[in-house]
Image 1 (cartoon, rainbow, N blue to C red):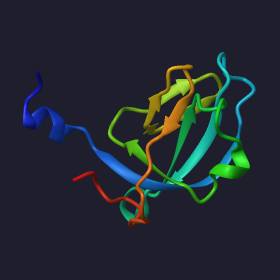
Image 2 (cartoon, rainbow, N blue to C red):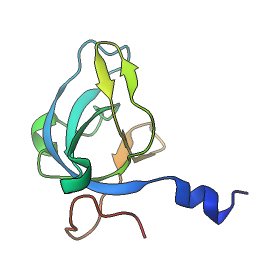
Image 3 (cartoon, one colour):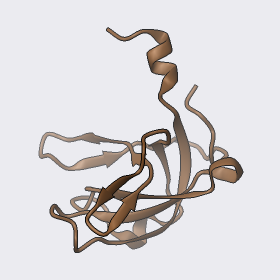
Length: 110
């Protein structure tokens, strides 16, 4: 079990995908995403292994939940600055976590 303080240490925020493209250099099939996380955090990049269910063009404008306080991570030639959250289906495909109504970019999970 973790403590409430442990949970509060993880910054989970909503952002809107403003750009998405294939990431052919990745070892596993992935997409490069740029997510607008509001005025305070700005736009951050993320590599996401979500190619089973998502095409780049379909993601632009979609709001997604992100972990924003992990250190940046080098993935091939790309720096991933946030972790876009998803859930595994039984077939291994990842379904993105999104709000069911629009919220302000940068809003923190309550």
